[in-house]
Length: 201
View 1: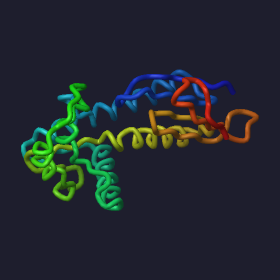
View 2 (view 1 turned 30 degrees about the vertical axis):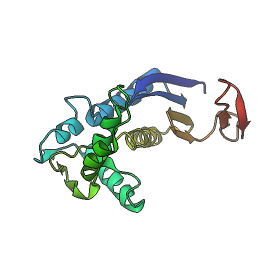
View 3 (view 1 turned 90 degrees about the vertical axis):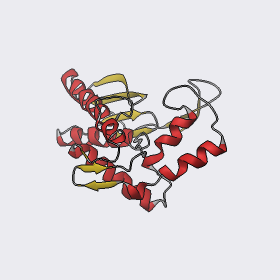
């Protein structure tokens, strides 16, 4: 079967879906699911669940099961890595200007004042009830794309599709193989020469 492919911008990156045996309706459905998840987790969209939690001033906010599942998994990952993943990093990210594009180097004094807010142990998740301490803010950018790719993968496999590739920036999921191939070819692009490969397996 010939592949169908869709490329679109979501979650601050270019995403590509390539599915063998699929059709445009399938791609539209998958893209819609990714955009729906982005709408739940955006830190800048005033209608998102994460935005609501970040601006609740310490009050509980009811979130969807998707959001609760993502936060639960991410909190566990943070514990497993000794805090290497910190969902409450947003105040520090803002200080560097990463989300606004107004990049700057914050002073050590400013960072020292913000770091006490980076404490995932104070995030309270009870079912779908999410409570953040006043001043704390979540940023799910480190985990959202991977969760979305996982969700799309599950949807495709449940629908019987066995050969596909999902690319979302640094998150890539390859399943099965192209027709008459044993597997997918994976290459590393030369950072100095666009389109040139350093190696391929």
